[in-house]
Amino acid sequence: MLQPLVFRVRLTCNELQLRRSGSRSLSQRLTASETPSEITQVSNILTKSLAALGAASNEKDRAKAFTTVQAAYGKLETLVVPPSLLLQQISMTYQLPMVLGTVNDLGIAEVISESTDPKGRMSSKDIEKRCGVPAGKVSRFLRFLAGRGIFEEVAPDVWTHTKASRLLDSGLSYEEIARDPIHRFAKGAPIPAWISHTVEQGGMAAVSMVTALREDKYKKSEEVFETPFNKIYDTDVPFWQWLEQEGRVLNMTKGFEMNNTRNVSPQFFDFSYYPWRDLPENSTIVDVGGGVGSAMAIVLPLAPKGTKFIVQDLSYPVLEHAKTFWAERDSTAVQEGRVVLQRHDFHQPQPVKGAAVYFMRFILHDWKDETCIEILKHLHHTANEESRLLIVEAVIAHACHDIGSLTEGAVEGAYPTPMPEPLPANGGRAAEFEASFDMHMMNVLNGVERTYEQFRQIAEKAGWKPQKVYQTDELSSLKILEFVKV
Image 1: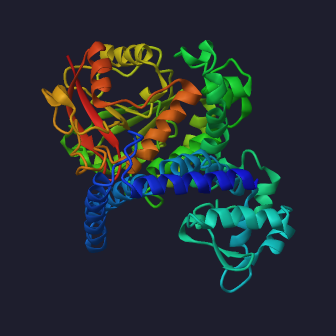
Image 2 (image 1 turned 30 degrees about the horizontal axis):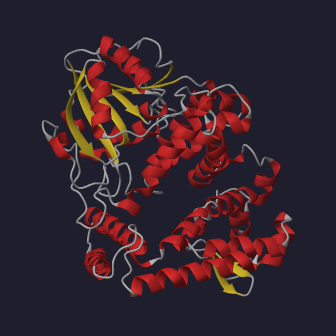
Image 3 (image 1 turned 180 degrees about the vertical axis):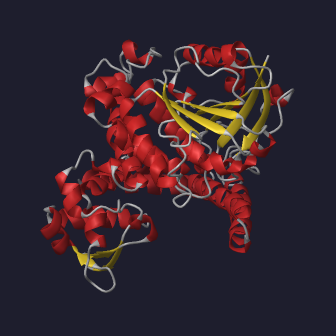
């Protein structure tokens, strides 16, 4: 194992020497005259953003500063880390989610939470006694994560929680986890469920991407049943159907509750930017493919008096879970008919006619354009002239600063203010989550996270005209795209 390390050091030293000498032998390298200028520019942006972050007095300013800090940090790394080392580091980052997923799956966070130590500390040996994972492996897992602020090593092989690692605690006892290791994620807090879903199913699909895309069957297909996920799990059914067969759909549903749980991530998914109060009293809002209705739980207090919410989903287990979800949040909502749980397949004609709002959150990114157009046509057929279509999705921004004529005729909010140069216009590192999720959608469903112009094109082909794009937060690329019937 020493040979690759020696090679890396030699290569890195050679690159540094080339930079010092101002060599122009490789076009991809920054020249000596260009590098200091860009580094200075980015450093100045980073310094100002850190100061703004410290001075921020509200969530909006804090989110804006944080995003710029992350973008500047990412750009600075690409300027100061030698390219070969940068590529080697990136090639090994697959270990991070896998270790996180393993620790999450083993219930180590819950074990540490059960520590009887006054300071919440627990040794690797004591963790081994509880969950059976050898102490040596425990230390290696947790030391790896501690480098990212997930757990803290307070003494050799002794661990305690950080703010981040505490979120891995599902709230279940370790005994409960051990009794039902597969389905227990549906019972606890949403973040462990989210990690389980993305790392296990999404991670395995990502691993398969390299080999799957060597084959034309997967490389050229846009079908939901011909993906890297299908290849590695050796199944010809779409991802959603596979989840139902495996009894894992509630795990994933619980994970997606995180996206609308304010006490977990208050800076995300702030639907108050949309003028819900302008809707007429006694309006009907249809949450198409809404899962348990977690989005409507946030919208409900923002809507006018008498608003009726119809939460539609195809899955029987999800709709059953929705009863529990609403009973815990508003015990009379379903009983009084303010919230209606309805089984519906959005690939079929929409049964609710003339609703004030047809709301779709994280639906279209699952499907190719042709399927999206058909889904939107079903809503168009039942909407009236006053109806609004709200599509809640991540809107991918371009990394380049010059987007030509794309902004001509665009509705308000369609294109965000770009990051200052020389940062990537879309934030670069700050937009990495959205870019990663785009890859996730491609790998499991041949889905896609779209740009504004891509949303506009599919909506117009289904008879919908863009009206406005509302943000949900300075920190999030999630937008509320509003359309009216043509």
